[in-house]
Amino acid sequence: MELTYFNLAAIAVGAFGVGFFKSTLSMGVGLVLVPLMILVWPTRFVMGLIAVHMFLSDYAVIRMFWKEWEWNLARIVIPGFYIGIGIGAYLLVQLPDFWIRKAIGVSCLVFVLYQAWVEVRGESPTPAIGRKAGIGIGVVGGTVSALTHSGGLVLSLYLMSQGVQKVQLVATIIVIWLFVNPVKLTSFFIGGLANWTIFAAGLAMIPLAFAGGWIGRKLLDRFSQKGFNLTLLALAAASAARLLWE
Image (cartoon, rainbow, N blue to C red; front, side, top):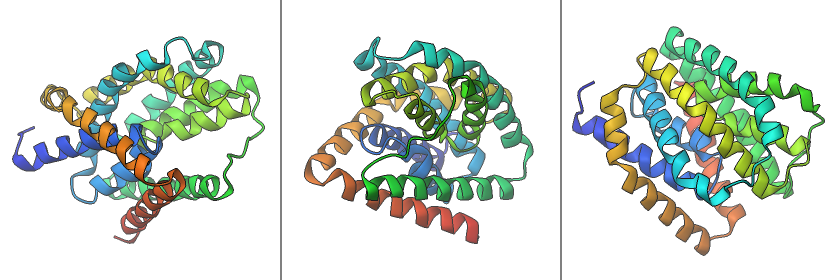
């Protein structure tokens, strides 16, 4: 892949956006950043570079949640995620671009409606999911993660159903990503969705990820969390609608 100014701009936006959303709306990468970016840049290129940024950023935040995770639940989910990532990456490579964009638009709208319900009601619904269903949850989450980078929401629903509290929930998701994202990124390399040029450029853009996180934190200090989240969700809904309408 040739690193044109246009492509470098995408890598910079991706780095800043991943940092920004990790410090504000945790589901924002899949709900807002991906739909917005694929309106401007090629779909598969965006999916590959976001996978790079997600992989690199995991190791910067894990120390803040060290040993806070629920490993007994994580180890149930991880094997299913490997299967799901294989399925999702295969679909991402094989499906026509038209259907990938429609799938991202539909899943984004579904997740936006769920997250908006949470913001308005002030609580998350706790689904009744059996502990052993974690393998199936992993398959679904891995597929969604590979296709839309929104696997975190699937994981959150499962972990909440097991009574995992906020800090432990975030820590468990992060530790799952530590085991899962290397496989996801490898599958993207194999499928031609990512390469060493994008990886090196993403590594060089890490300061922008930290800047995005810092700015996101400052914005949250100025605005209410609910108002901020609802604004982002409205932007995500508009982007998803645009993808479905095109």
